[in-house]
Length: 234
Image (cartoon, rainbow, N blue to C red):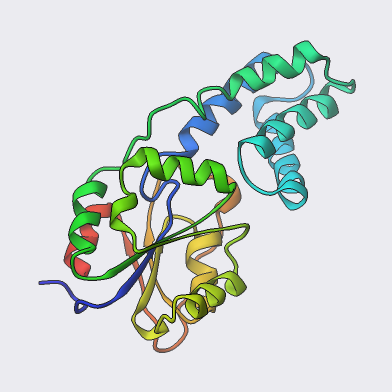
């Protein structure tokens, strides 16, 4: 018997909540670091440089594959202390080809559990990133039919959650954000007055790591390992 009655609103993150995503970026990064083979920086130090560059790039250009490619080129130029040639850029971009060519790999139990939840609750996708990329992944996933609405935002912060609440006339007391990122899914949704379910994913992007906030009085924060367990919760 589910713990919460039918009629809840469930907002779902997409990347690394519904399907694998970060593992493909990690493979591209590993190939980039091996190719760079820096003589004075260890692979871990190169990764730290790349993390810093990605943070800068996101602030200026947003999320998505185009931003990631820009970060790799910038990281190369800073660590190599020279401008990237067309050959270098093409090689670096080649490391990212797997990211936009792979089939969507749903996480275990997502298809069946999401279909079941959609029969009892209002189900909305709320993700961030490039509009075209995220829409394309949703279409290829085969999950679009389960969502009553789709929200693709530039950043997931308390303001964007409050805007979605207002736009869809949600009741915060019966609305939940479900995702794998403390930074984007859990902490800002709690700050906006929603409940949250933290779905642990071992490969969550390092820039999405953060200490999970304690829920304010009257709000729920539930941590689960595995998407299928949502079926016994809702």
